[in-house]
Length: 456
Image 1 (cartoon, rainbow, N blue to C red):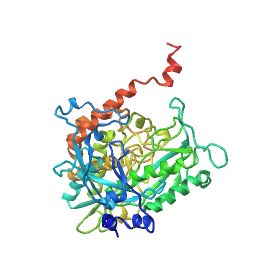
Image 2: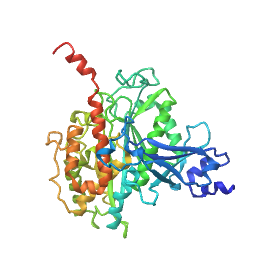
Image 3: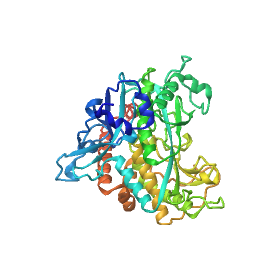
Image 4: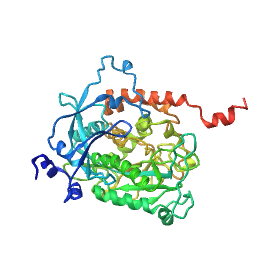
């Protein structure tokens, strides 16, 4: 093997299999920005093999979803737009099977010039939260559920998003949850998703039709939070590329169509004792432990303030409508999908807590970090949850802030959560969200034109 390609021995087997007997042409050196967009540099594979230092400006993490930059004068008047040092995490290497040539994607770790992890990097934020668990001898396990819509191409921002056309020549219909024929309507897209996932070495647990028109849910096998966050990050791009092959879009907006349910990223959590490998939510007799209840209480107490991390945009709050199967409170119960915190049916060894509040539009690193941080604060402070809900929970008092601005105000007050996520990261994140909200307020909506133009 060419000495410049010796690093190939370090990458996962699925990536090695993908390039076996083929000429590897390109490497995508990538990181996830605050919105979850893939950013980085491409280079010829042989040049990458030299392992020269790679740099990107830290301004990447001061951008909003519109491409604007946070006003740094309000945060750091010594800002110089310095360089960050990128180092490949070879364990993350995976194929980019939709490209025209043989390409690998490799996520990079990001540090400053002194080797310290950059605090604004979402992947580092998740690592920071995981370090709190590590210090206690715990290892969290997560399983994210990814919901998204396949929609008709939309190149005019002023036109509403429409369901995609199925193989029957009719638009996808809503209220077809779990329908196999509904999944078959866009079977070619699903086939490409399966093929891409297999080539990338990802294990899909299930694919189902959700309740919305053209809405799909993909469940991933449970595992380490960093690994699963990487997979969700990769999957968002994978799914979008599969859809484009079939003349439609895949969108992870929380609420792309007003008359359809929204898309969530439900997060299942359990926590292992690293010394024994046992689930700390379960006693030796198969009963719930105090730790199980503490974790639930942590979500109940801190998720309202964490909402900006798991519902990051103005559109995110349109999803929280009880009539469309989205939680509006943080009640908890076993086997009850009307609660914000659900305890799924499982064997005692698999006892877990499901956060149903997170939206699919969140950055997976930030969303997982925030949810785990809330649970950790419950564990560490031995918080007690409210009494479990009985019956439908939609009528319970609302816990989820109804607007982005109200959510940001709650985050301002939660010092413990801010410390876990990182003070510097949280300050820049909030500044970006306020800027996005201000930009949104400058847009006059169709509703205003329809109802106010001639009536007031």
